[in-house]
Image 1 (cartoon, rainbow, N blue to C red):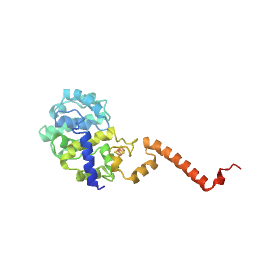
Image 2: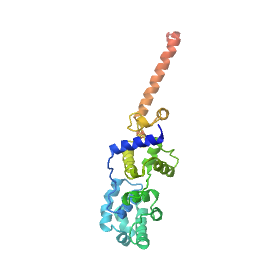
Image 3: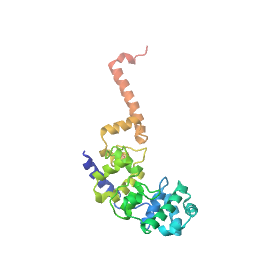
Image 4: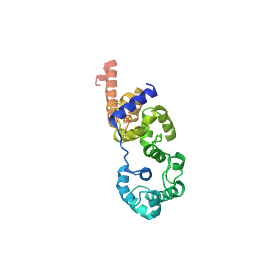
Length: 252
Ligand code: SF4
């Protein structure tokens, strides 16, 4: 199956499964989305959603956030991973937004990436979800799925982003990157997956890859079957050997 056909079928399946995937981080505007995404590094979305009501209760604009001290921000986000660095970045990026962008979040990739603690993925999420500017944020789930589905060679996140942008229609990027994240979390974890029964790899994977994953032990239900297959193969081989050489059955 060609890569474009595979992508079209994957998109159809994901659209059916996640028709309107919600943005998992609570926010009300581009600034609160930017802060929430910056907080989500090394932290679950659930954890971020627990701390942001307190933080945004104190400051939900760049101007108000810039007035808080780093310690005040830290007190609200302490339970997130890497909290001290994130508190410093949130204060610093708010100050830059006030000083250089009139207190608003710029809808521009370079300007977003220039903010402290804002990488390409965070900037991409803000661009596509807050401003509708085409972007394809690639997180660890999306990077893994693209490689497993044979849509990218998985060499780098940058390459995955380029490959996915090339193969999926631009109008689908906003919902598709969210659908892929949900699918990655719910169905396609880093380990313990079953290629033959999976709603995507069941048809998208090559036989070669299914066999290779089995041989590698997989880590999921398949790996238990692999063990069973191995022992079955051994039994069959022994039977065949006995058929060829009936003498081997006789006890000395
Ligand atoms: S088999 Fe399913 S769970 Fe495993 S890599 Fe493929 S899509 Fe993901």
